[in-house]
Amino acid sequence: MAGILTFLAVGAHWNAPIPAHGHPPNAIGTVLVCLTALPIAFRRRAPIAVLVAVCVPQFAVDAIGFPNFGWLGLMIALYTMASHTSGPERTIAAEVFAVSALTLLIAGLVLRHIDLGDFVSSIVFLVGAFVLGDNIQRRRLNVAELAQRAERSERERELIAQQRAQEERSRIARELHDVVAHSVSLMIIQAGAARRSIATAPAQAEDTLRTLESTGRQAMDELRRVLGVLRTQSPDGGELSPQPSLGDVRDLVTGDPTLPIELTEVGEAPSDVPSSVGLSLYRVVQEALTNVRKHAGQVRTVSVKLTYSPDRVEVLVADDGRGASVALNQDGHGLVGMRERMALCGGTVTAGPRQGGGWQVRASAPLNGLDRPEVGPPPADVPALSVPA
Image (cartoon, rainbow, N blue to C red; front, side, top):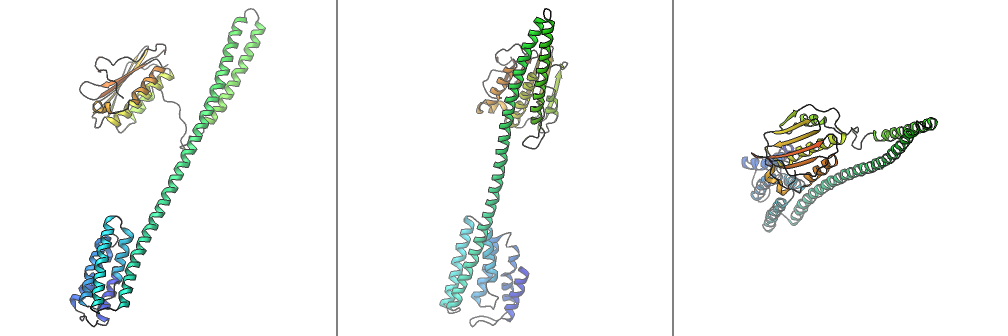
């Protein structure tokens, strides 16, 4: 476009009639008319700068009276400025251009260099170029806003679908709980009756055991049916995985590329860790690492230590970041959640700043799940502090 306009402007400069008040074409006029078209090549990169670069030589050409191609390049620059800029800078540029163009046109009308028809047509073309560019920009913004609304509506529909699916799964889980609890309770009663009558009434005990077997099979069939529904794909498209256990802490630590984590295991890992204990300790480690990412800032190392004993498992997560300095500004929900989760399996959890800087979380749970002490104060090397993890 810039090349075509330059060609037309130079041709008009050398071939168009010379205005009554004008000057014949020469080298200076050729340079000026070229400058009225060449900047158009950069109109999308710097619309306001191109408008200024076109205005100055165009007004100079008109003031001197060189023959030229008209204000086509100027209208293209004005259209581009209106359609590709926004904010106060566009307003200022439009106002300065309007004052300059109107001053030049009025001066030409007063000096009778242009007639009234040219004056009116010039104003109409310039205003039309600006209005057209402004409308194009508004249409572009409306299309973008409609696209954003459509995307937002799609996300909302997906969230609603996920919520409904989660509600249905919760309902299925309640049904599963009712079925299993009823069947297991009935099986316990029947087993006790069979045990008491097996010596004195073998036939009755046999009937009771047969009923017990039938009840167990029905419970298993119902369990398979409900689990078959729950094994379908989750709302986000991924397969539902089983609840994590203590053994999954290794995968959680080694599979995290965002933190320099060192894993240490002391003792021999027991093979019969209760699922509630393993899940609770896993969640504590997961929450502690999440808090390190949120609050610790730059850390050089994060240590995760698992200590196994015959009747207890202990987890220690420590970092050398700045978690202690920002802990008092948090809401404490993380530590409360850890304490409630560990209390369910008879364990304890403490958290606080560590000596030498940083933060640490210590959780301990019994393997038998029988002792349920209250959450005590932090160990000797961790000062007591009621702050979040």
